[in-house]
Length: 302
Image (tube, rainbow, N blue to C red; front, side, top):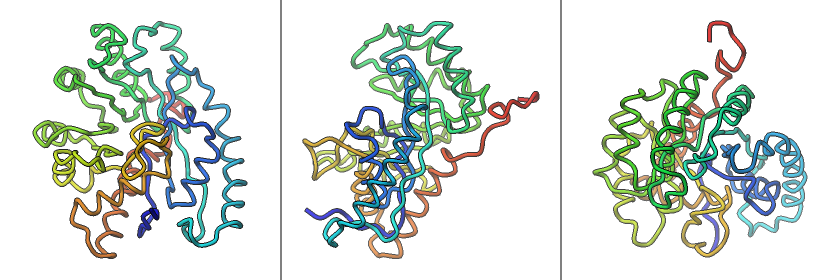
């Protein structure tokens, strides 16, 4: 099945590059298919901060791989005109699964890494009551601590919420939603759950689940998100979209979700699709491709 051909660049606002078999190749493939921006997730409790060190190498190798792809393209691979390696930014935070690892040393290391100007968000953070790999009270405490850290740094937060939306929302109301923004990652619920997050000003990101055959409620919810709060993502290597279920997901697969999102939102002409895709990309740039905060620049007023 041929890949969708889109009328503009797209952004993958949530990927785990370090979990991919060949991050450089996946970045090249993403660039070849029009993915111009990727936000990669780093969890210091799980993989340390290795991504910070190897990202320049990935980007260099991706540029080389992309050149080879262009030279070998026979017109059937769906490579966009004048492709480029995606611009990559970093979100760093302790996942709720790893909340039990939280300690003063880990907090200090995370705080120091947030000063890296490639970092544009704290995440993914939140609560996961499905697997309960960390005690729930510990999850809540660590979530609060990272909200406060994000607010200190002037950075937005990227949320992981699974079967814990009530507690998560209550904590955010108590702590205060960060002024820099809140991104609810991998939305896969219905419109009833959506409304309070939208009313709180959150960005809502849709990934592979939007394309799943029986995800009608998710598609209905996607119709209702204000256009300036709508985002695309992959959660790669997870959540592979239709029609590629059963294979590993990569940032290039953002194009499948974006294509379905255009359909769901009624963008049924090239002009309407181009306008919606431009809005989606602008949203990602506004939230995640931000300038360094005063705190990151070391301002005494931060």
